[in-house]
Amino acid sequence: MVRGIDASKAFYERDVAPLLDGIPHAAGRIGRGSDVLGLDDEMSQDHDWGDRVTVVTEHEVPPLPDGVELYTFQRFVSSHLGCDPEDEIDWLLLTGQSVLEVIAGTVFRDDLGGLTKLRTKLQWYPPEVERYLIAASWRRIDQELPLIGRTLGRGDVQGSAIITARVAKAVMHLTFLYEHQWPPYPKWFGTAYGTHRAPLDSEAAICAALDQLAGKPVCVPFHDRPFRTVDPLFLATMPSDGIGSVEMWCDNVDVLAQPWRRMALRPAYEGFRA
Image (cartoon, rainbow, N blue to C red; front, side):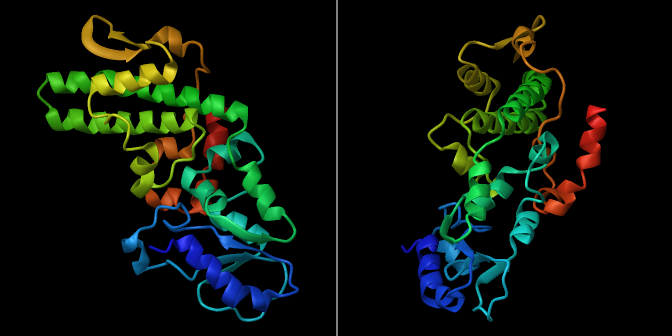
């Protein structure tokens, strides 16, 4: 099967690059689409696949063929990221998918280097933001981990399954943080996590994964009950406050997928820190 990235490069070289001869620009197969993530298959070819390329330029250009997404640099940043992150809150308002729309895929050309510089900057969080997110993730997991067994013990199988899935997602996100891997949107979240890992479908499986991430046993009894929680002494080594990035507490697609909605949450983050 021809990969979408390869089809896009051929389209650029054949139909787009000649029209931009002499015009400084950046071009590549970046942005939205399973092919940008390298996860396209035969089903992916039914829409938004193949002859597609993103062009970034500050100059006027002649009419370009269908399949070309044309941006100025600032418009590209605002439409995919919401902002070029400068402070901690900017980073917290990004999602893994929004960053992957910039750093995944392939750049075919970058005359001025601005797109390449941005992609380099976005490879990972600044160290202080990473530490904050890891701590927030551990505390989020600790809040619900004991409820898996508590609900199951009352015969609430469905309720326990819901909590198990919520905690499992948080553990997967924490794993991405430790491995410096930006998580994609839900369709590919599990694929990116890796099917080679044990399913996080029970308290025991989740605790085993947490102990492995911590590099030592950190799941301890919850008071005198037959449930598990994260060791308070382990949590005490981390920052004690914070809700994490927007995708750690919000799962509304219309918020996560639309940068302007995420940027509108900045005052809320500023209020949390007041």
